[in-house]
Image (tube, rainbow over all chains, first blue to last red; front, side, top):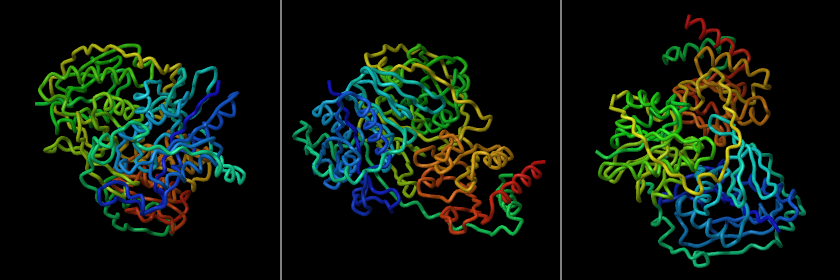
Length: 261
Length: 324
């Protein structure tokens, strides 16, 4: 039987750009160019490797986001994923992590899955909670923050480099996994891959398709509220000196003045 | 007064510093009740009481160590159900560790509550606790609150100075029944990270980090020597970690640890956005880099343009001499 892998990816504002907030205190997605979250590339890579090692597997990439988010799907498809699912609905604007997990969980169930793979966090919100939320919603094991992962005989195993220990994990499929940026460099799309991606199917879903009411999601449906966002004041320019042989001593003098030594 | 549940991060009853910070913050909102899972509750209770825990809810079972995350969610959910005072718990606070955030997420979903992660400060507000977060690589500061259910909030290390405030700290057993999902992910083996003998990176008052300019694993002793003279933790930039010069557990930056020490020393680090995201909120920043144009110099309180292999050893020697 075919191994059905769903990779969750996010279209995020480029982290090297000048990111800021829109008037309603949601992430301004117009000001800065978007792209596939770098950390999700690792998830796509591991999904492709697992699929390559399986007898028969299909990799679906799934995103929730505005129209432009299809760029993220296209990138993942050009890396080698087989098909895409794009959940897009105007009522989704401003949805929080809990609401997003509802949308993704429903879309995953609709798509069908044996294994869900996520990146370790998005590069914009950076919460890193979505894989755990998905596992809770789907009622399947959570095998997260893996630096090494393999799937064999209906089981997923992997190495989790946790806060204070390294753990070896094991769970039966179906399961939700997440992989870190230590799991292995993501491949670059080949020219052939880019051309092929244009012909790969992308299914479009909206909230109706997923039986989700508009009130359950969006800014008004969020269970958290951002009340204020202020730009951090630029750090006041400090002293920069050129080392003329006494640089270490000058630095020590500064640190002593600040009572660090 | 409403209770505030605080998840205890500990190693066999030795309470880690972020938990003391959580207890300190919890007192701004209500009465801290510590939730201690695993062995060592009686040892931990003394420390937890000293920092203001009126009660310590304790549960010990092999499941907490043998299976990932979910048994701890079951226990915290039981603790929420057991909260005795009116309107309790007023919030659940956990450390913003990888595991802390995952526990928080699942708990929030079960409670039908909103979740806030990576708070750097917490105050009482008219409509519940208000959390301060540092976002977009610390370019913005936001204030947020949970608008539905019991606020579940994870707090970053070094967000508050722990203040002693002795309370009863009475240990009570917390009955926990594990659900079907609890045993879903087996921890087949666990290897504790070897202690470097230095402070924990995320908890340290001073952090000394090395980057691409260090030039090789064998040169990191220059960075380590300075760290040891200052009693500091050692960090590394992504470039240094990707090159295999220093372990990933020491990486400072967007995909590594976020640190917010009193003093951050960057040696041979250019200061790419990915790195700045992890250290920009440090109180005082100093840097040594041979490139005068390196973006790190935009952040520093004091910078030296020069060869780190000249400047850093001289600094180490000077620090050692001054400390006598």
